[in-house]
Image 1: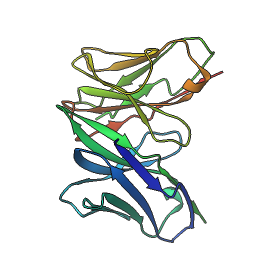
Image 2: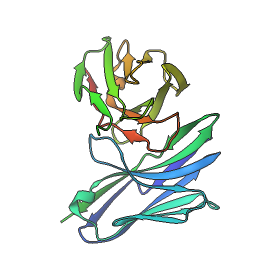
Image 3: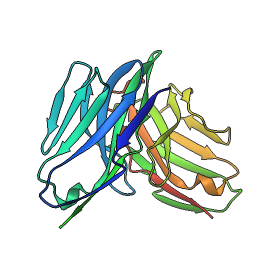
Amino acid sequence: KNQVEQSPQSLIILEGKNCTLQCNYTVSPFSNLRWYKQDTGRGPVSLTIMTFSENTKSNGRYTATLDADTKQSSLHITASQLSDSASYICVVSAKVDSSYKLIFGSGTRLLVRP
Amino acid sequence: DAGVTQSPTHLIKTRGQQVTLRCSPKSGHDTVSWYQQALGQGPQFIFQYYEEEERQRGNFPDRFSGHQFPNYSSELNVNALLLGDSALYLCASSRDRGDYGYTFGSGTRLTVV
């Protein structure tokens, strides 16, 4: 069964601190892995997309890693800001026939406090 | 260049009623996917439309139906609303059923009372 599991479910950190969010997946056939940021009541916005051959990808203060052997990914946020408070969703794309299916994790809710 | 546009942004309906949500895809996109996101959960795939036909469907009852128009815009219809249908409904668009450039709208918040 295709699944994406994220940890922790929620996280509270102080402004300026770093944090790392985890994602484990069992999805086949794997196409790519994405991290999305979702503000409350808004649609998800893509942060990074990584294919099988990519180990790391950065987008400003966000750095994602991918270990395709262990089927694990992480999202590291550096020097957190209050605006980083949001849900972070790990999504794995699987190729199905001539289309793709996105499998979503439940997300990690991050709260950055002053 | 407009992104994905959804309407309305918020909606309150009574149990048993019917609702229609609308989505205009990003310019250049021809594939529309719909998701339901309950509070505190990840989005759950409802169905995908391409070339005016439903191409994929998630585990949702027949009360959930859709349509895609020749201009690629799409509607999601939900009949006989239940309290449990209260959620954020997200539309995402892409091109040629691919996942490159997959873009989400801001969603429609549906509350069933």
